[in-house]
Image 1: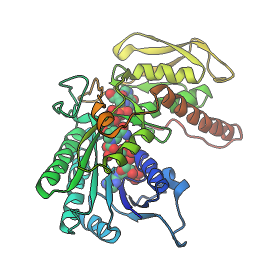
Image 2: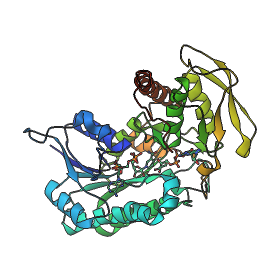
Image 3: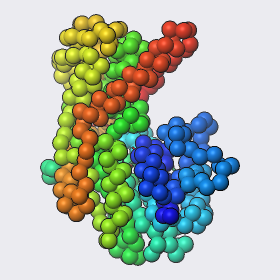
Image 4: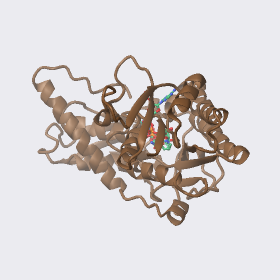
Length: 372
Ligand code: NDP
Ligand code: GDR
């Protein structure tokens, strides 16, 4: 039985990857952070009672800022494959906590690589690093490939640039099997609520059912190449099954704007929008509505506005990946389109909103408009 260790197992990708590897028959270990409240919602459905025998999904407390903890876990688990998905992964937040982001995202990667080496596991372990299209930042070439020059535009991207190169360096210096997946944005109903797609689908669902009035966004002109997390974790595993370690761009090859994603999401909830104005004055008005799906929305309502708080000090305006290498060398192709992703996310958030609306109707307090 192969043994895998996943950092960031409680996150979007970690949860899908754990599921995927369990289905493949792996023994899966995950590192979760200590928190003052439960933080395992995304993996609760695959949780196994620690008191039972024959467990193949095992969680360990840990943190990427703690070398001794990482070393102990690696020594205990003796993994065949390590997937380093843990990170402070929010670009806007990285401007507010740049040092913490560097510690976890850059040095955290070094800590794991060095622990693998010091334990003498460098010839046994195959290592996957969650690299990102944010490395391209102010893009130097379109579409972006494995050879496009990097130009990071945030503390997050600068930290991930270090992680990218230290992964390459351990491969070249110590012959470690270490790969970078340069992943473009990928989404799902499990996406964190403060990333733009989920923020949109959640707000649209809440607005449709009268739990929220208006969605406030930053730069709606931003263009992204959005894929599905399920497709992308499959590729993370495929990268570690080749003969030789290598780096790959994982993308769909198609981009749309944030504005288009808003339009698409609203349509899924029976709301047709028209956008007026531009820059800080841009807003979206309801021009028709299916009141079976969105009973609380009326024609003429303004349900999207711009809030400058969501603009970033430096923006990544456009990202478009070319996944040809992954297709040619590994036979990987993304199976889920952005339209399907959007439909799945809106349907899931409508389910949640219906539950919240029911609770609210029965006098329970439902707080949906948290700051994001
Ligand atoms: P999430 O933000 O959903 O998950 C991040 C995970 O990292 C969570 O499990 C989180 O724990 C954990 N984590 C955060 N800080 C630490 C720490 N100090 N020590 C240990 N674990 C920590 O991210 P995604 O699942 O979306 O992304 C996975 C990885 O891929 C990240 O590294 C991200 O930067 C990268 N990436 C993501 C892309 C995307 O579009 N999703 C695209 C390209 C790269 P907790 O649950 O407790 O917060
Ligand atoms: P990104 O994702 O920064 O690409 O990083 P995010 O969804 O946060 O932003 C995408 C684009 O939307 C614009 N935007 C807003 N973003 C947020 N979060 N909130 C808003 O209100 C808003 N309004 C407009 C942003 O400015 C941006 O242009 C994600 C993360 O998962 C990273 O960890 C990963 O490395 C990259 O994708 C690839």
